[in-house]
Amino acid sequence: MKYEELIKELCDVIKESETNASKIYEDFEYLQESIESMSISLREKEKLTDKISNSLGLLQHQDLHRQKIERVVNFVCEKNHIDKSQYNLASSAKNIDNTEDNMSEEELEALIKQMQG
Image (cartoon, rainbow, N blue to C red):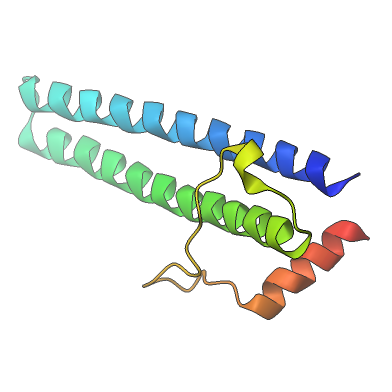
């Protein structure tokens, strides 16, 4: 598989992930508003709100993975002199603060080599 084909597939995953995350977030906002107007016990409202909060946390964790994929794509483009503009990619951050999920340059290069093999 050529780098360009790989990058296109990864960009498709990135875009789909962004679209799905946005829809999920909107649905959770709707649910949160609906819960507030329901005539159920405060305890039940808190349980439902906690479930929404936990799900949003998982969604945020998923977004960290999407950012890692963006970083790999940007790295591959940069190292192989591929024009990123054709893939409509945003520049990705060098790291994501306040998380243990940071990827070192060595880990990134190892991941690229693994994909080549």
